[in-house]
Length: 272
Image 1 (tube, rainbow, N blue to C red):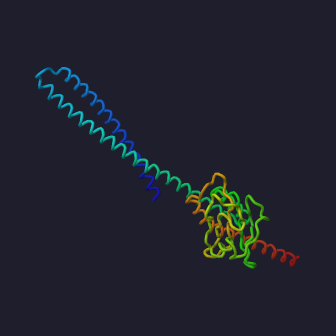
Image 2: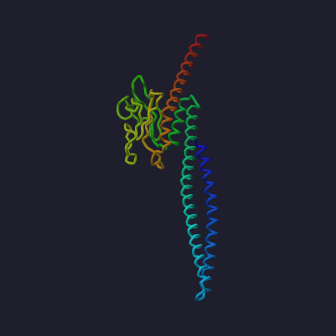
Image 3: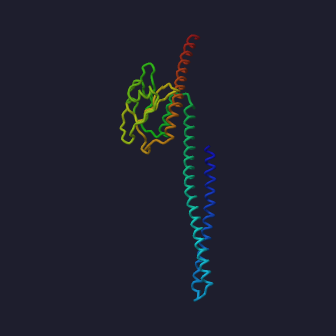
């Protein structure tokens, strides 16, 4: 669909250039013809004598021709103006398509990176880079749910010390509610938001299907980031699912590696 839009925009752009070129050439011809007729009309008016009907008829004919040329010129100018407006619309659409392509590329890269490793620390680092570079967050925390205690605890932070982030009970406060409901939270007024660890600017559940394993809590955006764009919400959706899967898989892998290492240690002791 996007390829068709790009071809259409390119085709209409070429059409506009051709129409504009022809219109400009025709307008120049009209102006030259108009000037020639006006000059001829002036000559006839000067040469017209008393009782001479021929120049009068010629003057009338030339005046009508000039009026016709003026009307044709105005029609051409109106057509060029219309095509210019149309071309501006297509140019704007072309820029939108470019942005969409860039956004899709960023989403693909982010998704690929998330599943490129099973190392838990590397997964957290990749998520951190995505949040900084693609979303534009400056201060945030990645919190995971301890299902034994039903508490959410920070496992990685950016811009703030992890020890500053308290733990939150499942279902309590904004963070606990997001983890329980699986619904995103956005502060009502970003401009006047003041950092509150229990009430983040943005809180996104990290979930596998309907099972929430943690949350992403954003407390501050980068200076140049004034508001969220459509792609940011797509990234939030990606993080809600892909990041959760990557975290869950890497933790399982790490746990299994530790268990295998422990089992191998027992086997080594028994066989010695």
